[in-house]
Amino acid sequence: QVQLVESGGGSVQAGGSLRLSCQVSGNVYSTSFLAWFRQFPGKEREGVASILRIPGHTFYSDSVKGRFTISRDNVKNTFDLQMDSLKPEDTAMYYCATGLRKAMRAPLNYTNYDSWGQGTQVTVSS
Image (cartoon, rainbow, N blue to C red):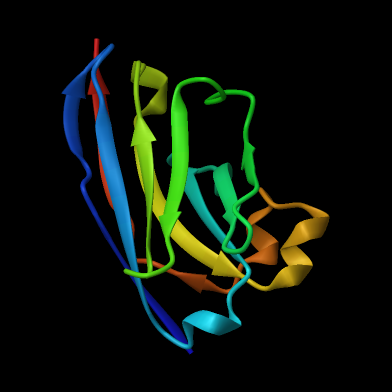
């Protein structure tokens, strides 16, 4: 069992930055992939970024590539999403998630992830 708690959401103007953090506890060593997803009202969860816990390879959706950066700290068991150059269309509920090695088939597909945080709202105003 893995538990995840997000922090760091909030409101910001377009062009600004926010940093989300996810604290992982429980059976951390059972996880392979750490990821951030977002969900717009009435839509399925969309993969934003993921990272292999070891050795740290990263994957990004085209919509955030070059603006968002995912990182992890295997000592503190946290992983972060640094979001720069935010746009109003980035407004969504953001979730952190962990997945097993099977997530390699599609690292940004939410169906490959089995543990989820409660979500944190990010709002970007124009």
